[in-house]
Every structure is written in C-alpha cells, then in structure tokens.
Image (cartoon, rainbow, N blue to C red; front, side, top):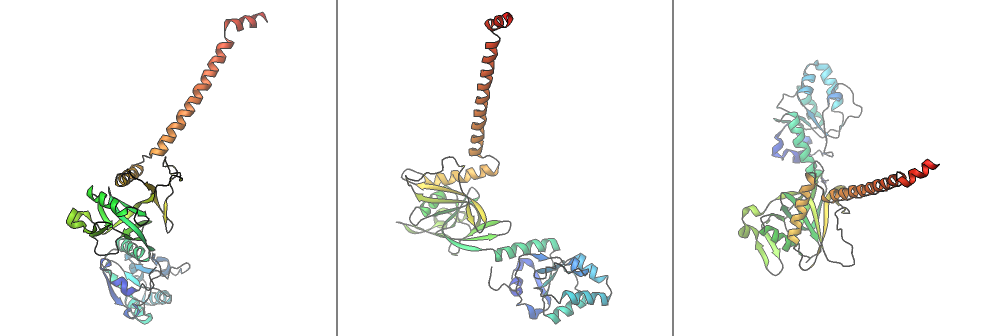
Length: 337
C-alpha cells in the first residue's frame, strides 16, 4: 500500500478525466480503500454501515434524488453526510452539483470532483487504478518471457541459465519482458503482473557475451513492457537424490500474496533443452485452460481400465461357477437327491 496516496495524485491519472469543483483545500486527503461507494441509502437517511472511508460516487440517481428534495431537506441530509471523514466525492456524467453540496464541500474541505464518464465506466476505471496502486509488490531475481501469449517467470539461482534460456526463446520468436530483475505486482481480478523496473528494457546480459541489444538483434516486437504472470518455471541443478515429479499430479503452485500461480520445477542437466521444455510447459498450460489435463485424463483412463479388468475377472468367475453348477454331472447328482 502506498504511504501517501492522496486526492491530488488521483487527479493526475488522466484516464479518469477528473476536474475539481470545490473543496480544493482538501486535496491532501488520503484514500485508504480500493473500494468506492454509491451513497444512495445514506442520502435517504440510513447511515448504518456507511462506507465513509471510500470514494463517494454520485451518479444520475443520487443527483436526481437530491434535486427533488426541498432546500431544507437537502441541506439537512448533506450536512449529516459531510460530517463524516470522506476522502472525496465524484459526480459522474458531467452532472450539475447542487449548490448546497458545493458550499459544504468548501466548508468541510472535502474535495468535490467531476468526470465526464458515466458511473459504471468510472467505477471500473477507478477500481483498476486503485487496485494497481494499492496492490502488493515485490522484486524477484529472474526473467520474464512472453511464451505463446503466456507470461512465464523463470526463476533459479544465479548462473543456472535463466538468461540463456530466455535468449533461446527469443530466437524462437517469443518476447522478452524483463531480464535479471522482475517487479511483481498483484492487481485487479486476482492477477499478478510482471514489470521490468529498468526503463532500458531492450538490453540483456549474457555471461561470456556481455550486454546485447535485443531490439537490434531480434526487432522491436521482441520486447514488451509488462505481462500477466501465469506460469512460474524454477530451474535447479539436477539432484539425483531428489525425486522429481514425473506425472504432473504433484505440482505445487507458486504463491504470491495469497495468489496461486502454476509452477513447474525443471532440473538442469547436460543434454536437456530447457527452452523447449519451457515452451512445452506453456503449451501444456494452454491445454489445461482448454479443459485438457493429460495427467488427470491418463489417471482416469487407468482407473477405468483397472475397474474394467476387475469387472471382467468377476464375470469370468461367475461364468465359471455357473458352468460348474450347470454341468451334466452336477445335474445327475441333484436328480438322484
């Protein structure tokens, strides 16, 4: 969470198209919640559970309701409304603010803003912006590559071959987002984005070669600014004493601030083509997104096969018993009894 996120900073986000109408002395007020509030119930006098710590959005419904009140009723309800510690008020669709609202905004030093966006559009834009600002961030040592449209974060100890694998992926037509250091940020809709903190995104360090210019070697389409991280690949030296996942049923997700991301561990050894394995891991994740889960499908098929074999054995046993009891020798014995 930012240390001091104020209304003044909110005004700098041009996509919201905000303009101050009143209460400009309160632009240093802080926003402490990513959520906004439509104060319909509060304007009707119900202030229980009033989300006063959020940005208050006044749309056509709220403004129309205030305008149909007489001046004394309007002043009374707005006086109580402005008695709360509110970050700011935003009037959408360029609607006209009531004069009492402007007066109380100036008196209480609570910013009154206006936008040309309609209420639903502004609420969505505001939510995305605030979640992006308030989302937790963390720097990780690794590379981020766009493989088949998926953001693949490559992790591993220094010198394991992260940059070399990324370089090979670039040669195969994939895109580099970040090399060596990646800024991870959790934003809206439970997504984690990877961003290159260094503005010189088209340079890459390769041990033995030094600094290379990715754009000069592979073209302007070979680099990107940011990408949602959907797969984490951890490279590690092959350890013969370790039991690696050979089915895909035991993989554990990568956790980033309570968000789970698909994760695979690739042991590095001579003869293993790491870039091809990363491509296969990305393609396999796309396959899972389309409902094709190879490990689960194979496990289900084997289970069904074993069940069928068990049923077959039961049927054969029953047929054998039926044959014995229906044989002529058995029937003669039954008749003699």
